[in-house]
Image (tube, rainbow, N blue to C red; front, side):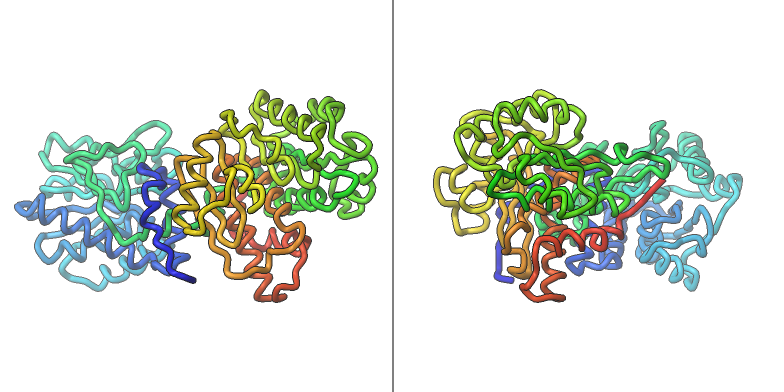
Length: 513
């Protein structure tokens, strides 16, 4: 891949991260080859450096750890801190219960060491005995991966640490987050200091008591689309939920001349259903009466309705308006045509979608109905290719990637919507953030594959992802499938090949409850 300096776009990444953001960034870092072992070791080193700088006079340190990777950070830090301090470490469980790597590896190391006192699964009274001898308590119970509310041994440990703080006059340093910060009942460690990693986390304020430490995650992990985006966009599927509980995508497109695109978009939404987590549970496509049967024959899984005889008109809008009110996301424009009557009707459809608060994917011909002088809606994403982007910009985009990305961001901010600028290098922006997706091959440069992308984005949007997040996830899923197919079939693929590959590509993120 040719050198592209992405640092110029670093300002278009988030300044404060949610737990989901951090999880996606770490996933992308692993995808880039930045192993979790490196990140944990760097985190441990950052903790040790802060303690040695801030608490060099503290001899006795107690580290209280959970069984996840936050506890793994604490375990790795114990090894560093043992060189200058007397360190005791408590695991709220036992080593065999630590399933995540590299946390498990760090606990195995501590089992063999004699310079750190290691205690597994302590009773509350024993924890108190350890605490009262400590000058500094490190909280590494739960971190950004924590969800729900503190329970069981974790809750008891947090309560004990907080309850005894004033009595024994120790200070508390939390690793990455005060444990329980994201809990539903707001029960959390009363930390004096927090060392958080990579960037500030939601709920924290950067000051003298909260410091941000670099652990080696490159800016590429935030700017480049990767599997972290699929992880973020995926949604939990209810075990006993119905099809409409998983989201409804309404697809509107086609004319007497073009009919393949909306069928493929519908197939994309349906194949997303098979993923159990990211797919829409229901999809319906509206096309002209003259091509309805042809679209239906593409797949027996599509529900096909007519919006009129040949073209999309004002009368068509009246037909589909009620259906739009029921949908979670609307995909509009594939092969719909560009006559004045049709573009006027598309413009009215966009206005209705905005009024109804629907997530809207505007593709292909429908892009020419967008008012370039008016602010649109944050719940809309435009998916232009080169010619459509030339029209939106009233000129050709720059050939320089950074400049090109800034042009997309500025246009997105002006129109107040998201833009997914399709190409070998795809750029997605909502005006505040920029994401870039690099493809390895030209396999997707074939008829209909761009329409499949619109269907994928609509499927993600229908399941509950934000429209920008849906575009980012869709761009990566689409191109990663294209790259996989290129390795399998060369450049001899068609759009339906992409559709059929969707479940395999995202099944790793399936979760149901």
